[in-house]
Length: 118
Image 1: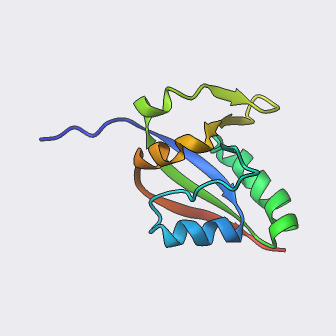
Image 2 (image 1 turned 90 degrees about the horizontal axis):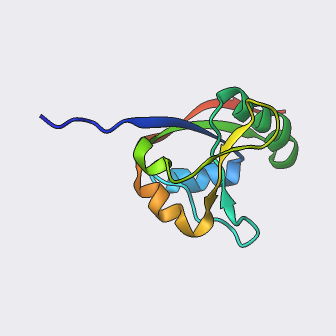
């Protein structure tokens, strides 16, 4: 019998273009960052992800989505939690050049759990 390694739930607010790329990757990985995106930042709080998707992505991208996914907890321990504002505004900052390694530690599929439109 194999034991499943502990995972951590993360959320990512995203716009339609990035979500299309995730779909192309069969819901198993995040696409490479663009040159102006040196960091991939999943968040640790669903409400924070909702706020970004609803208030920022809808305004700038025409729609906003909140995704949820699991990542191997031991692997994530290399990324210190960053407090980007209030006490629930918590993110992980994954350097773009480490995204392939990060993707390799996603457990299961990336799921869309909220959709926001104007």
